Image (cartoon, rainbow, N blue to C red; front, side, top):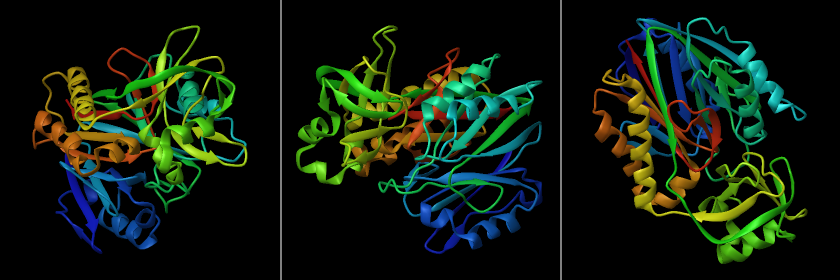
Length: 375
């Protein structure tokens, strides 16, 4: 595997082009403003004319050991011993996201399949329903990783690229075959606090009431002055969900606020009668979470030299880490070494198994890592 990485910032691309016509796959992550610019897409197309270009808008861009805003990260890949097959799926306002997830897996040939990587619309989607559908049809438990596109702290509109100009309400998928090994893991670093409450009213991913009280009122009590900054400020306090029947726990993050209905919309489902508690974290805990994610994902690769690491971290982590945000990327480079090319973005949701031999889940507030290495 040979890789170029270009960074567009301050109105210019910086980086060396070495694989031009040979590249089959280009990953692009960037802020909403730049990801939409046709002239930038056209430049990438001219630079890598035989590649499939996939990407999405972000809430921060990752390259090497650095996190940037208002930039575009272009990672071009020449696969020497493996191949990748791409597909894309359009969404509508009444899409059955569970069915879309099933259709995605049904469309992929499973013979020799090693890994599936997905980039999705980030706002107009129920991510947990999408992942449930993919998981239902993933009989061989092939690793599936990826994330929901972002829009900084604005939560207005997200975009994906499927070998054409960026569009909203779209999912793009890459399926990997051949002599390629992959590793993946997802870790958080958040702790619960306050009393445990019961979800008394919710419809899919829209939460109405906890303990019979309007959820938005409860969040505003906790947030105080920061309530004015909703929905972004809610990212500092995600919700831990513990299912009553199974005891299974996971984290959900806020995507939208409806002041009129007094509701919060989350990235995934909130089951009625489940238990919930608010969460918070420290910079040290979040950085330790990133460290654990790279350790767990590396275990799946073994001693193989990793060619590419794709990091997808939640915007909520970025808001907590602030000026220390580079540290959760630096810890990955420290463990992987500089021979591994690092790219990625800050998302509205992460898709991955927790670790080896676990099923794919929709995560929030995690660092999710996908490692690729040609054998």
